[in-house]
Amino acid sequence: MSYDIVIRGGEVIDPSQRLRKVCDVAVTGDRIAAVEESIDATGVHQVIDARGQLVVPGLIDLHVHVYPHAPLGLDADSLCPAGGVTTMLDAGTAGSYNFDAFRRDTIDRAKTQIFSLVNLSCIGLIAANLGELMDRRYADPEGVVATIERNRDVAVGVKIRAGTHIIGAGEQGWANLNDAIKAARESGTWLMVHIGESPMSIPDLADALSPGDCITHCFKGGSTRVTDDNGRIHEGIKAAAERGVIFDVGHGFGSFEWEVVQAALDDGFEPTTISTDLHAKNLHGPVYDMPTTMSKFLLLGTPLERVIEMSTTTPAKILNQEGELGTLKVGSVADIAVLEQHSGRFVFTDSYREQRIGERLLTASATVRRGEIVPGGGGTRMRHLAD
Ligand SMILES: [Zn+2]
Image 1: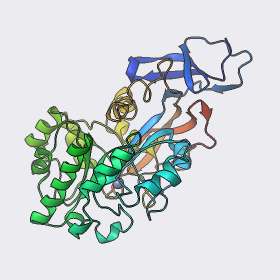
Image 2 (image 1 turned 120 degrees about the vertical axis):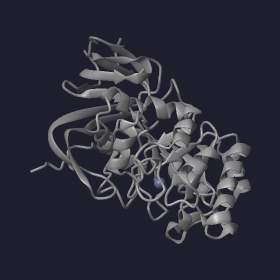
Image 3 (image 1 turned 180 degrees about the vertical axis):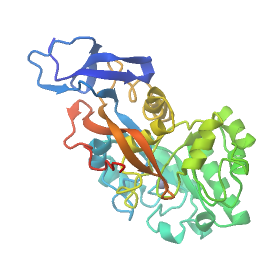
Image 4 (image 1 turned 30 degrees about the horizontal axis):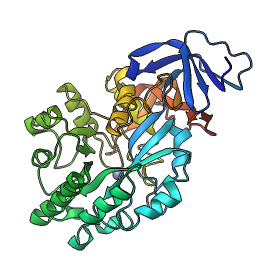
């Protein structure tokens, strides 16, 4: 049996199969062909030497902005090899008025697998600085439903940024949130809510959500947060997580505070998924890429296998791609990330400019998307050594 690619000798971690061992992975066409202790690589087109490295399912980043025609949008196909991210969820950069253009110009052309949420605001984040729902006329629940119905294969849910300076205060804030909830229910999908300095408390907001809906930026600091005055997770938040509300990291420019994350983990509250919220303003820090965000959880004591699971298998389930993506099962899509684990003393910065020193840094050294090695890599360009 001859293969197109063999990845040799890496430590394979695949949470979908509870697999962690040193072995080889072979790819034929766009599928995983074998995961075995020793695969004969004679005559194989490309061999990746992964000794001393991790081999995991292609990473899935559940919160990015990759619509380049919006001011914050990045290019998906360069983010892919830089972070080992083969699947991305665009978190509502486009709304009902520009989603078709986003699809035509970006989603359909990218080699990276892009799924997307549709913003409740018809203009998406084209003028995000002005607050896309400050004027209620921009809220377009019917347009969201129609857009999702036209694009079922890639438009998987609804997005709202629930900050007071975006959706308005008091009744206006609730009216916008309720429109977003309505659009999610009527389209048979789910809602991702960006929590910011929100007009309602986070427990009240979580109460309004259904199982499968998602709170992103779950570890933000500031006045509205998932922790109470004693630094414990609100009971209402724990209850929401228990009934299936998803808590997504969405690190971003202003949404990841060491103290909140630490308090949550100490209280036994893990995020459901790790994601970056990468956009033009945080790409060069403090976020950089998905492996850097994952390394922050290693620093905080989350076990490596859990960190991989929250960045692969779990987001695949949320995207209804279980068994296809976020797995190295034989027959699944050949999306693979080879990650290098560096040891040293590395500086990691949160969204509030606080620094901590970690001893492990993950970087993407090789990425396979649909059976092809993607040009480029993460390297160690953002390795900040302490001292
Ligand atoms: Zn975002």
